[in-house]
Length: 169
Image 1 (cartoon, rainbow, N blue to C red):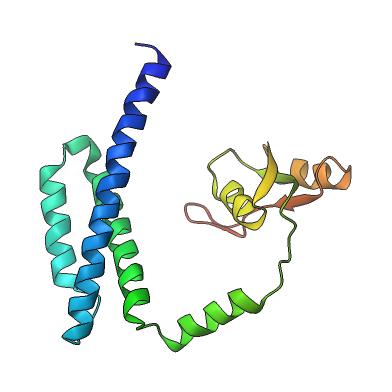
Image 2: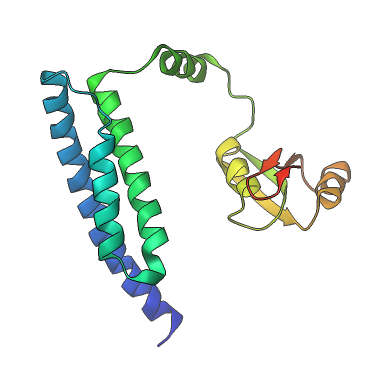
């Protein structure tokens, strides 16, 4: 089978996933209304643990870990959505939101940005968040990133402060 055939299959599955995710979030919205009306907390840790166990049991061995991560992320998204709908944000959440709204845009929309690592690494993801339309160039080490900026190939450089697998950088 050709790569495009695989991609077509993935695209078809993704269309279904988007519809199902939207449907799931609509139910989360209804649950938020119920929780608000009944003064229940958004987080139901017992329910989440039970659901994660069921997901792991239903998943093939080779993807159990990925299934668990997917559902943990969906739970987090559902809770965030419900908290927003209920308006049950904390004082810290309000401060962060205010800071986001009042802080001026510090980085330009685009530009050439040097990153250490490979596409998909955290430095690249950070660059995409900071510069919405960046042309990200990846380099094998930090010296190459600094050199790219120093020589004018890139105007900005992005690198990690910490690495979850290797500790402080």
